[in-house]
Length: 311
Length: 276
Image (cartoon, rainbow over all chains, first blue to last red; front, side, top):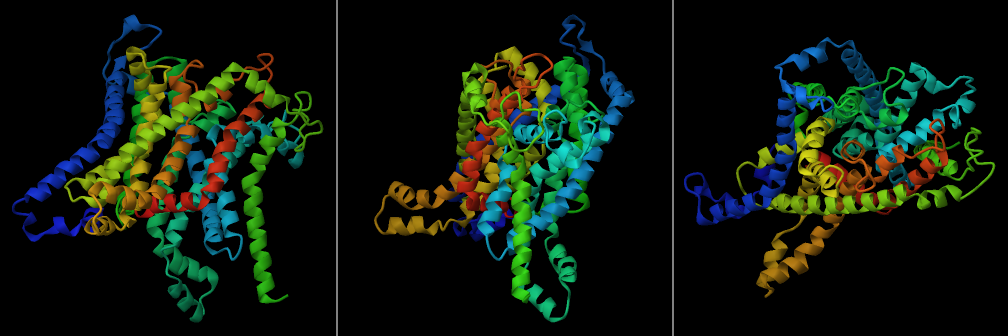
């Protein structure tokens, strides 16, 4: 993150700054602390405090239906989570949905970004219309697709000539959920990729064209390597978001037909079964999974260079 | 066919696919909302019997009008708070020299990646103890928090582009510092702030995880949560028409914002993503 160096106004970059802070620099720091403080305190207080609270709850037997039996039980809740087949099944469901939906979003998002970037006419129309799925309420998107796939109300079974209800079996439900996720999230993927496409200099592509490179060669050899940081950021954000999938599954069937995700399990344990101890253990495990994915992307692929820094 | 004509028809096809793919689910939910309850399950895309009764039904339903009030109120307050806090922080990040800038952006990034469902348990527990469960502040606090990272990124990207020297120039020309700020800087900063406001409002308006977990009655339930609890005529019937009509009502304001401010939203999101 190179933000500081780029944004520093000349006055503050005076030479003696390392040795002794001038009055002016000190004043500037005080003002900065005053301005940044509130936002920083809110972000830390509202995330760090509850996550610490969740860690403490996860070490206790804490069931709101039996409040009298609350006590410290160490890592027993985690033992329950990791030894429960349902947890590992839900991890598998989440990974399946994440991998398939993010891959499709990436391919379609790249096509959409290229269309938005290169369209020779109606560019405003394409950009406006493509943003609609992004702006739409997630619950509405889920209902629209659920009611479209359902045999009772929908037009899709009729269109495909299906006799049974696609949402009554696992495969059909996965297809419907993944279509919903792809529809809703491809525009955001495309916008992040569009930002990367804008960084590819046209002269380079022209030069390659003159040298006889085909469109596909130009895309793979020039465009993709140059926009690699944007691709990694887009994949990171979409993967993390897909891994937390909740709204769509809740609206479709609350995790029936073998589609329960980790977030759905977490919600059900906390709010349907009111088991705060066990539910908090699931929360912490999910938190660690997300942190691990972010770590792999940022350290493993170097995705951290782009968000936050000026690249 | 000439090369140019081929190119034009190729683009037309691509654009047509994008438009159809983006609009079909929206048109479908509008069509469903216009079907009579008897024909809601006929499986046709276009209604055979058109009606507006679903709309008059949901506005007679207290649950829906209360939820609409909650969604608008909670969304606007959360957005105002988040944008105000983010403006201050983004100004400091864009203009001042101080240590720990990278750390602040790292905290914002971490919050942006945070699995929100992990907070549901502790917040549910805490809110019930201190009386924030099922209240407006109970939703405003998490909404504001999770809107802050995007607001800070987008606003600091915008603020870096502002030619701040103009402020000094105006003061040299005899303006007071306050006049210089109001007349020169505020107009330059307004587009970025408006864009951020819209992006943040969409986030708050769309939330479901917190709305379904931290509210239970019409006191604070927002529209997405309310739709998911619409009662059917009996336990086994789905109120298709009501769901579809309510879905259309919450979608319209966001679609108008998106279409009106399309150019700004694209530049705001891409600037926030790459330059941050």
